[in-house]
Length: 305
Image (cartoon, rainbow, N blue to C red; front, side, top):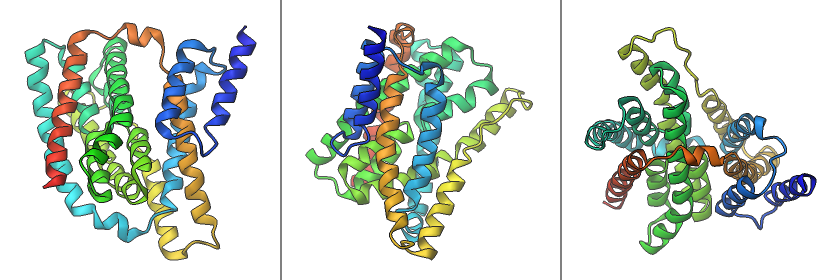
């Protein structure tokens, strides 16, 4: 039976390499695989999905021009600063109101304000968050990400958002980079370019926020997980800007990167465990969902205005 389940798992993974499996469907297949199939490399799943995500993001850079990235820069930076500040403040208030532990509330706020699981993983060591708080924060963000991946394209179409509006909204309101790229790629090419550029600019705030967290909590010795892949993305954008299509090579890499992102979403879904879901409790989930809905609504109001 285990052999059959592993075979089905590999077949689903290979199916995600085809153009018929969209990012939301890949995530759903991953979730189903997590619950009903034997994962052939569960222990290495997180590391593999992390590396694939970073490679895919760098690959997407070969499909962009520097002027496209810079065009959304000033507006995105201003909105990100305001969004980050307000999200952390609202998270603190919600945490106190719902009696969520201070460290868990901070992790949920950081994950919502910047880039979901990556921000949580970077900040958790420097604030001495225990495994339970970290798992709760990651599980909550994961579920909200999965929901956003399905809902955002539908809402965007229902509200007749432009490609630019949707790209900016997705980058500001969806937690993890993988779900941002997945939702934006389903909405359109321009939305994907804008969402990726804004999201990666937003992800850079992991570094100063982690440093501030370490300083505030007197953990200057804690390691910081630097988002080096963003540098690779910038180099890829510059290469496409100054070298053109490189004989058709760069567009091919960008196309492959989008397909690789679909595979990554499958693995992210497959990495969920029953134990992680069992750790979820009502108050952190309510806090995370409320914070996300407020941020999403505010971001939507800003981009439509």
